[in-house]
Length: 452
Ligand code: PLZ
Image (cartoon, rainbow, N blue to C red; front, side, top):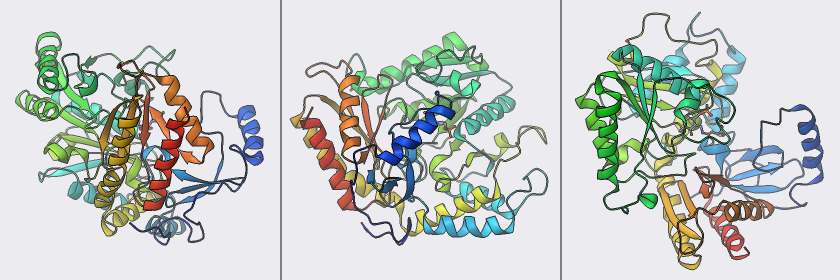
C-alpha cells in the first residue's frame, strides 16, 4: 500500500501524525466558541477540532495538528480527500458551468454517472437511475418508486437500521436518540422487523439467520400482508446500527421471499457501497441482486451526490415529471463522481479495502483476546468495528466506548462510535491510507484500551 500523497490530498500534506498543541488547540477552541454562538446546537461534532486541509489518511486541523483519519467523514472520502481526479474533473466542470438544472437543460455528466451505476451495481439486467443530493433523499425516492411500481404502501425495515433524518427516513430508522426523539409524528406504513444480529441473537449465532428470516417472513405474511408490502429496505451491512453483519443466509432468504411476492428488495448501500467492504457493493458478498440500490457517500469523493439505481421497469414506473429536484445530479458533483470512480478503478480500491481488513482484523482479534471488554470483532474490508461490553456479559458498555474514543482523539486518531447501544467503535479509514498510519492508529487504539 502506497504511503505517498500523489493520488490524493495536496502533495505537500505529509502522511504522518503530528501533535503540536493539546487537542483541541487554541485556534480550534476559538472557532468552537464562534460555532456555539451561531450554529444550531442540534448540530454536534465528534471532535472539537476544526479542519484546515486533508488528504490520504490525514486530517490537519487549524492549529497544525495532523490527525490519523479512521472516519473518512463517515465513510465518504474512500478515494481520499481532494483526490487528484476528483479535483481535476470537478474544477474543469466548475469553470464550464455550475448548474443548469438537470430538469431544465440536462448535461452529459449526469448520464455518464447513471451509465457507470448501471455497469457497476450488481446484476446484468437493464438498469436506470435517478441522481439526488443526499442519502436520505435517495432512500425517500426508492420508497416512492417502489410504491408507485407495486401500487402497495407498506415498507418493511429492520431493528438497528438507519436510513436518514428526513421525515420518512426517520420513520425507517430504528434508533430514537438522537435521530428521532421529539421530531414526530412519523410517516405511516413503516413496519420494523427483527435483524439477524449474530452477537445478540438469543438462541446464539448458529440458528440466527434461519430463525430471524422465519420471523420476518411470518410478520410480513401474517401481520402486514404480502399483497400490501411495497418494499423491504435493508442495509447489507448495518452502519449506524453498529456495523452488524447480518448472519449469513439471512439476506438471500429475504431477497428470495421478496422475489416470490413481488416485493421490491431495496439494498441501502449508502455506507457500504463503492468499495468500502472489499467489493464494489456489499450485496456481492452473498450474490444478492437487489431490485433497487441506494448509493451516496463514497460515490463522489466528498461532494454531495446520491442515487437510486435499479431494474429499468421499476425505475420507469413513475409518470414523467414525478421524480426530480433542483440540485439532483449537480454537474460538479457528477464530475467529482466520475473522478472518484476513475480513482477506484485505477487504484483497485476493493483490493485496498480487503488489504485494510488483512492488516486490521488480526490486530483487533488479538486485542479482543487481551481485553474482555471487547465482546465482538466484526465487519468486512475497511468497515470494521469492535463492540464493547461489561466483561463476562453482553451488557453494552457505552461509557467505556466513549472513554476509549476520547483517549484516541486526544492522541490524534479520529475514530467514531456507533450502534443502537452506543457501544461500538467503528473504523472507516480512507481506502488510500498508508499502512504505517493504519498500524499507528491501531497502536493508539491499543494504548487507549490498555489505559482504561
Ligand atoms: N442510509 C445506510 O449510513 C448516512 C449519518 C450520520 P445522508 N449515515 C451517516 C448522521 O448522524 O446523520 C446514511 C446511511 C445509510 C442512509 C443514510 C443517510 O444519508 O446523506 O446522511 O442523508
